[in-house]
Image (cartoon, rainbow, N blue to C red; front, side, top):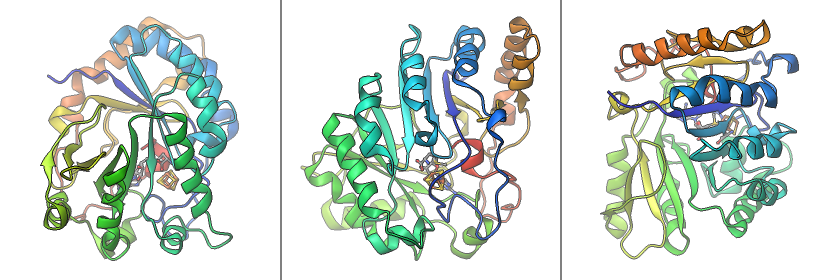
Length: 329
Ligand code: SAM
Ligand code: SF4
């Protein structure tokens, strides 16, 4: 059985972007109230009393947009200083990274994954749902700042959507030619915006690889991390390319992670709502840590049955009632 030792911790469900593939078009999301969010102290208590004793030692901070948490640097510092923490990373859209890259690095963070779905400012603004002043330059500056500060590996995540950004695959892959960056192409999942999904569907990683292979050639490679990406490299390139194929290749049997939502729900599988438990209510009402550990231990035992092992062409797209930004992608 796969060891589950990796916890993705959502710090906030809100975001300063509204990427079409992540959030439903038009409708308003019900955001959590401030008092529902786990505080820094509560997160640290849960790690110390529940997750670390059960073997968790790798953590990723996500959201929504985690840099919107005013205490983000303190949270990084606190988790990084736990002696059992083996690995700590953040997922961000980079819009606020120019300001936060240096303090986060000083707080001990070394790994960052950034969403970047387009290199074309107009297309970028359209994907992130922006119709005001362009957000492209500030986002790009955030990425450059993270590079300059020394984040390594610097990973860029691209969700590939037919007719939206598939024409930019070679441009995005070319970012790895001269920079030690890791560009990862992610198959679009039927979660977040079922309308866009049923309209466009997804492109299998192998098709994307073939485009890149036809242009430059491609060899297998490796990169540090905890994820399910298949890693390749353009011959002679400084950086690497990753392919996350959750739609075309089921990797559920190797799943090593669980997710903690910003309001304290522990979720064993991204695509299955079964088996979730509410840790925040237990924590806020005379917590019995033995009992909380037992509940999480039970979820760990039944996780292989909960893992959502079926993929199809999206016909079940109404199934997922929460978006990636709400679950903590
Ligand atoms: N705001 C941060 C960011 O964008 O990196 C962190 C949260 S975001 C929900 C985490 C990841 O989920 C991003 O890499 C995003 O591309 C991915 N994601 C969101 N919706 C998705 C979908 N429908 N299919 C595949 N990936 C998705
Ligand atoms: Fe925000 Fe990240 Fe979702 Fe885009 S993918 S809307 S940046 S949470």
